[in-house]
Length: 410
Image (cartoon, helix red, strand yellow):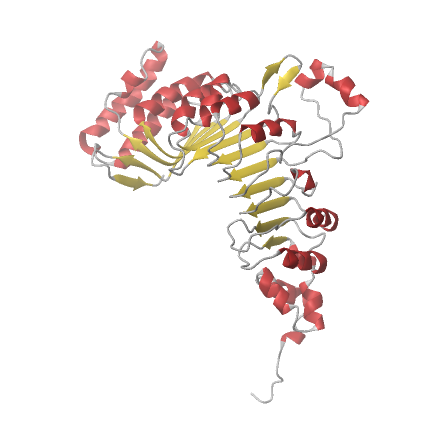
């Protein structure tokens, strides 16, 4: 063994070393940069700073953020995850206006920002965030009243275009340099998000995806006021929105009226709807009023089989409906025949449903207690009712009389 020379990291090419360093966390990268001058230069390679996750860094302060921004973060940054001091004993201001402006200047390609437990009440509005952002995700944050408002001075050309209702109906867009370019907004457990914040989003010109998870202070009236509809001067509300998700999965606020009741007035242009938890039962019946709906996702809830059949019967009036997906749904067995629930329709529809029901009765003779047969029969019945729709049952189960659910994966 003495004949072979000792081998160390100096013999490895730099591209291999960069790949090895990519497995380190941000804190470990900073420590590795203190080894030698060569490692310090390698650590500053922007390939290592495309996705920066600082949520696991305990003791993060604004001073550390400034050091990272000045020495490491640069044009390679695409995705940044930060944990604030909202739940910290130290408290204090975490994100300052000066740091956000410096972040916008030094990281012009930052497209996704995730903030966890951040107190944003010291910021006047979200226009201080980097203008290159496409996705903004807030979890457990505190917001000021006017955080989502944007002040854009109207130019004479915009005023002339605003008077033309035809261009507004065609969805004509104006893209002033100071406007918010966020396309996807995700809010998870943000109790300070209210109807006025939702109303402020109507001024966002590129917002196409909105996810509201455990936002208890959003009401049905607030959702009705922001729904896309025909107004006096053309389309009003969030008419650029294509995907909407609403879910209430915690016990807090379970006695409040669910915001999904606001879907009763319809929503022009909305193509995908996702309902979860306590928002499913009140919102599922109104999905048929979304004339442009193409995909419907129902998650983490308990549904009666008759309720599913009745609501899916109304979905047949949607010409472009393509997909219906159930995820983590517990089905309660029906107490009457499926043709009774789907009755009152045309002769051809009844024949198809009776055909599915006959297969259902044929299976009930020997497999009435098997949850896989119950969901397969429901799948068969919905396939007859929605022949052009793709059905998916993922991690679903059936609730028996003993309140015991048997898991089923399809």
